[in-house]
Length: 350
Image 1 (tube, rainbow, N blue to C red):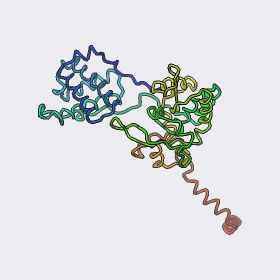
Image 2 (tube, rainbow, N blue to C red):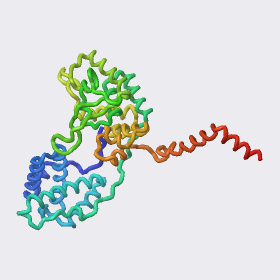
Image 3 (cartoon, rainbow, N blue to C red):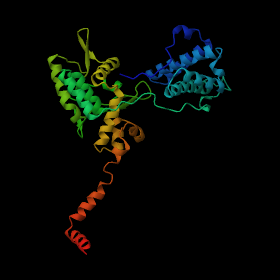
Image 4 (spheres, rainbow, N blue to C red):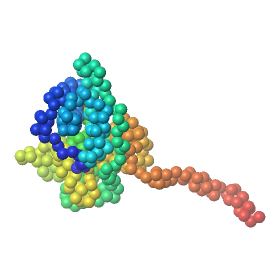
């Protein structure tokens, strides 16, 4: 499941309604603006949650002053409060980003009303990033052990699910979109990969970024075949590849279903399982099989190769392995040359 980072407890409606009315109205106007410029629903939900925390902080710690009167001292005080709450640097940066976004809205959209307002958030340095939780890295052997356990339990759907995660690097929001016809019937196959139609992936706006998703055939075929046979036994006719039965009807799984499955995988492997770790696994698997970083970028759907490099979990020693193998090859070529060997023997015997 998605791993949890320590955060401030959720705010209550009572706390929110007790805030400065100007700050409540400003927040609501900003969220309406975000909808009008096609920000994604998840982005808007995130802004709402963050801004409730921020405005309640203003109420409790800054005498409920108007956000439009924010000062650099206020930013420092808020940042210090976040640290004292045990928030991670990444979480604090996200809250700062929400502060900055609503500040940009005030400066650019409400300039006639707040002529002297300027976005000052980035004037104050943000906390240095540091890891607050250990990243899970699973080996090919560990993935295979998990798959074997699921097959032994005749849990063919979840085995297929893991294989497709490992063979595609899809995000949680992407894999629940998988359709049967991507893989069965007359699928599009290119260079040993199943190719999906363009689907909604992570990106700005309600529609997100439209991308085709690639799944490595050799990783998934065995488990896909077992799951399709089981689907026939269960008389599942849904177009959705991964399903759950609700009210006697097979329906597409949701992200909450994936989270529940990840708890089960964690219990089996005794290793913290979450969807994004399989995204790392896919990129690393490709790198180990000599795929270039630019090809990994296109496979993963990244905009830049530098992002893809973050997903490759290979140590320096492994990465340098075989780097000078060309020198050994050159020595072998020389030793296979009879004239060179005779010269070496002459040198030794003289």
